[in-house]
Amino acid sequence: MSTPVKVTETTSVEVRPERPDNWRTLLLVGAVIAVAIIIAAYALTGPRWGTFCLVLALYEGWTLINQYREDTISEAVWILARRPLTGLLFGVAVGWGAGSGYLGDPVVVGRAFAIGMVFGHFFWQQFATPVQTTHTESGEVHAKG
Image 1: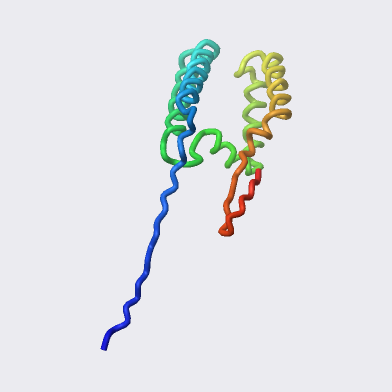
Image 2: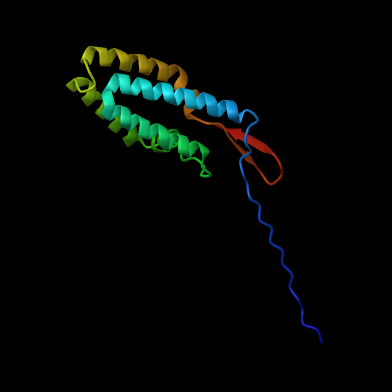
C-alpha cells in the first residue's frame, strides 16, 4: 500500500531594476548639478545652511543608488503631499520666513516666491505625478499618472 505524495512547487522571482544604458552620463550630470547646488547654497546661505544642503545632497545621492524603492527626498515629499496638512504647514512656514525677514528682504522673498509659484503652476504637475505602469495577469499593460 503506497501513501499518497503531495508535490508542491514554489517559484520565487526577484525583480531588480535594470540600469539604463546611459547610467554613467546620468551619474555625471547628477554629480555636476549637486556640486553646483552645494556651491550656490554655501555662497547664498553661508556655512551653516550650506553644510545642511550638503548633507541633504549626500543623502539624496545615497538614496538614488541604494536598493530601496521610493526613498528619495522627492518621493517622500510626494507621498506626504497627499495629505492636505503638509501643504498647509509648508505654507505657514514659508509665510513666517518671508514675513519675518528671516529669509531676507520680504519684498525680494515675495518676488522669488511668486516666481516659484508660477514655475510650479506651469511645470510641477508633470514632475509631481510619476507615471506608474502596472501589468495584469492577462498581460495587459495599464499606465496611470
